[in-house]
Structures are given as C-alpha cells and as structure tokens.
Image 1 (cartoon, rainbow, N blue to C red):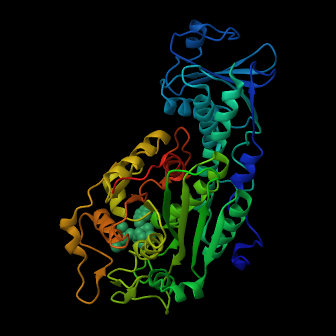
Image 2 (cartoon, rainbow, N blue to C red; image 1 turned 90 degrees about the vertical axis):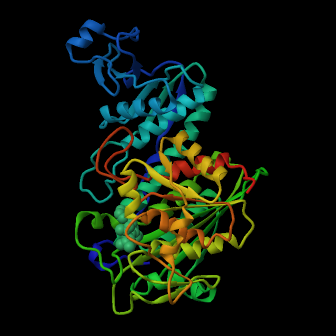
Image 3 (tube, helix red, strand yellow; image 1 turned 180 degrees about the vertical axis):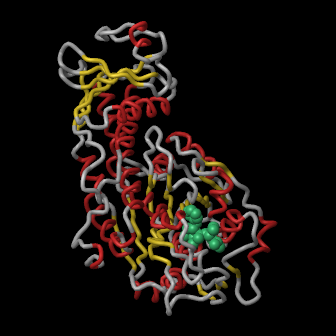
Length: 498
Ligand code: BES
Ligand code: MN
Ligand code: ZN
C-alpha cells in the first residue's frame, strides 16, 4: 500500500523499536568489562562499591545523597565510569525504576554495564534491569532529523549466576519489545499507519514470530455482517481491516484466552466532529488497544507461553464525510443486535462489538478486551491508572494481578446493571451512548451485551495511553500501556469457574 502523497515518503517502518531491540546485546558477566559505564545501586549511607573514588562525605559534597532516582557519574581508573543510583526500594518494580534512572542518566551512551543488586532472584533482577533500561531509553525519533537518545547496543549484567541472568534478560527484552512496539504503533501518525498498514505490520510480525494470521477486509466484513466495523468506516476513504492473530503454544497449556482490541487508527469523531483542542491531536493513539495486543502477541513464542491466545484487532478510522453514518442511523452488529448510533464519536464500542461477537464464536475460556474507550475513564482515574470491569471476578482478579506484576496499575469499576437502562433505544436493541454520568460504566455495559455470557474483562486505557510527564521508564508520548500486562495475563492465565 502506497502512503498518502502528502507524507512525502514512499515507505515508513511503523515499528522501528523492533530493530533497535534486536540490535541490543545483553551479556551475563561475572566482572564488569573495562571502559564502560557501570551502574550500581546504593542506599543512603550504605556500602559503596570498592571502586568508588569517593566516600559518602565526598559524594554528599557533590550533591549525591543516595535518594531514590538520584544518580552521580564518577570516573574509574580503567577509563570507564561508575554511575551510582540511589535505591528506590527492594521490590522488583523499584529495580525497574532504578534501571530506568540509570538509562536516563546515560542517554547518549551505548555500552553499559549494571551490577545486579543480589536481593531478588537473579532472573527477576535481570529482567527488571533490561525492561527498565530499554523502556526508559525509548523515544519516538523516527520522524526527527536527529535522534534524541543513543540506542543501547551492549548491556553487560554483572552477577555470579550467569545462567539465571540469561533467562531473565531474554524475558526482559521480550517484555520491553512488547511495550515499545505498542508505543511505536500508537505514536505513528495516522497517515503513516492506516488500517491496511496495520494489517501489513501484523502480517510481518506474525510471520517472523510464529503466529497465524487472517485479515478480514471490507468485502469479508460485509459477508460476515460486521455492521459496527462497516458503519464506523463509512466516512473513510481507507478500508477497514479486522485482523485475527492466533498463537498456538508448543506445550499444552491450561486454556485459551481471546483478546479484542480497539483499533481506531484516527478518531476524528465522525460527523460528531471533535473540536480542535490538544486532546484530539492525540487521537492517533485510539488504536492503542490493538497495538498493545500486537506488541504482546509478537512476543509469546519466544517467551514460551503455554496458553493458546487469539487476538482480534478491530481496525478502521472514524472520519466525517458525505458517506459517514449519521446520528440516528441504526447498525446491525455481527450476530444481529441492532444499535442506534446516538453519537458517532462513541465509535469504539461499535467496532469492539463485532470483535467481541467473533471472539465468542470459537471455543475460548475467557475474553479480555482493551480499548481507549471513554474520556470518562480518564476523568475518573487520571492518566496513571486504567479501569477494569467484567462479568467474572476471578478473571478481573487475574487482570489486577498481571497489572501489579508489570507495574501498569488498574482499578476495578462496577459493571452496574442498574445503569443499563441508559442504553435503552426506542428504535433499536440498544443505543451506543448513555447519559452524562458514569460514561465508562455504560460503555462497559454496552460491550457486555456482545460477550454471550462468557467470562469477560474490559480494560479502558483512554487515560493511560498517553503521557505528558516524563518519569522512570515512561517517556512522554504514547505509553504502550497494556502490552506487558497482556503478556503477563496470558502467560499466567488459568480458566475461571464461571
Ligand atoms: N477515543 C475516545 C475516548 C478517549 C477520550 C480516549 C480521551 C482518549 C482520550 C472515544 O472514542 C470517544 O470519543 N469518546 C467520547 C464519547 C462521547 C463523545 C460520546 C468521550 O468519552 O468523550
Ligand atoms: Mn470517539
Ligand atoms: Zn475513539
């Protein structure tokens, strides 16, 4: 597919991080190599490495107190540098943060070493260090004349247990890549990532990473009766794509989990055109759910995940034009449910409805959807915590556990059926918008209509998909939130007693 002529480009790689992380070589070593920058975590007034040219008095005199996140570079006699990092605590998440501080403090350095603190399992420590260092170094520089950071080419992890370090660092690279692919896809502007290009990326990743893929184009979607996808797409010159990915584990796992992602390549609002305030320039990220699934699924083979995973990415943009759907139009979702379009800007739930119905049609033990669905989720929980709801408390608890493992926080909201009447329509089975309040809950209730009573959880990432602040392993821009959460979820998934 050719790119729009105004982009001034013939080609664009929407996942540049993949190559960057494939070029990253992580080595397990028992001694730090000469001449590199070695990161060592220290506690305030705690023991210092023998090689430190300064003691605590000297360190304090240059302003380093060992506070969380603080760093200080010191010259070493071998020509390298020692970078002391103030410990932020003893948990795995703290180590990920400390490695991120190290990576930021060395942003223009490509050859690094890091001393494992030796407080947790060595494989876990290696994984956290790689994740934190790689994710903190991420910048979406693909469209800039000059890159803003240097890539990490070599990272030596210093530990006696080199075998465990190798295992953990492989996991860390896969996890970091899942997030960075999701970030790349969300950061890529809409003209450089249409639904068709998204399908092309998915095909490339599927082939390279051992996934099965099937792409349903516009004709197929007509045939399949996917009226949600087709209705949202009606105003666009770019065709829709429903992308189905399947991961078949080598070993027999305990179950099958189906993921459904919102893939609105750009959300202009449709005929309910969004005003031109900054949040709407961010609507290139309205495919973050689909991107998180693609980033996650691209890494399941090399992580040796033992459950079967199916993914549906519901991709189209949402634009106004003479052919766009109008308020008051009625769409027929796959399976026959009719929906009154009360607002064309509540489009995510329309495409997700088709994806959820497809998810119910094949045997699966659980369905988990992820979507930048509602401004209301952002109002309720801000930009650091995602919302989760569902019809199965055990499944929601598994989402909460995965979120805690990867430090991508979620908070459970009630799927309150007393609000379902807000979605009653006089002309159709349901309408796509409730009242002014509890908007993320009514969106969840809308989705629930399409899961046929199967165990289901819904993650609303509208608030967390974008990040203006710049902290730890979370640089500004699209966050890739959900990619690592989904990897952890499907890796540890066990069927619920629904
Ligand atoms: N993609 C948006 C939700 C969104 C809002 C994501 C802010 C990220 C940041 C969704 O499609 C949408 O437009 N929701 C509207 C619906 C309303 C206008 C009916 C909303 O929640 O404001
Ligand atoms: Mn919208
Ligand atoms: Zn949207």
